[in-house]
Image (cartoon, rainbow, N blue to C red; front, side):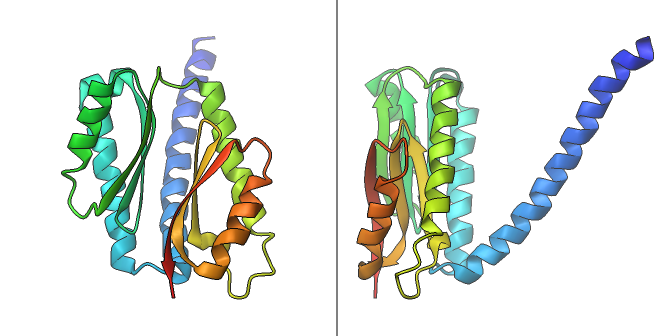
Amino acid sequence: MKFSYLLLPTSALIFSLLSGCAAVAVGGATTGVAVVHDRRTAGTVIDDQAIELKALNIFYGVKTIRLNTHVNATSYNGLLLLTGEAPTEQLRQNIIQRVSRIPKVEKIHNEIIIAAPSSLVSRSSDSLITSKSKVALFNVSHIKGFDPTRVKVVTENGVVYLMGLLKQHEVSPVIETIRRVGGVQRVVKLFEIVT
């Protein structure tokens, strides 16, 4: 009987380790593919990933932030989007002050609200909205030269934030497509327009 009790945790550990390896392998491959379609340079893509990792290091490395907030950082072309919840203005300002020191952050778009950290149900709903939004963008076929992988979609509390380097004629159809996705409360465009 003891063997059965050991087998399950051991199997779970092995599976999680293998899953992690697969995610790293797939993640590395998808990053390479994404760079091909991205309007950012490969160096900028790497800088954005480094900014996000440094922000995560702050969120998890500072005990008061880790224990009291739910904050996400998304970087695109040097624009750092902060979303989530902090219980006090002082804690929110502490987060902004810390991330503003991260090298290569050109601008911070602060969308951290003063509230208790969101529930797992709310976060799951946001993940679903993000997934549905990304799928909806693949149905935008009437825009010449449009590539849906150039749009970064972030959802927090039903609000969808759209980032990317888009041409002017791509912006309105993208926003209208996302507005029609079920569960979307509001759309915030953070696009940079390219020629």
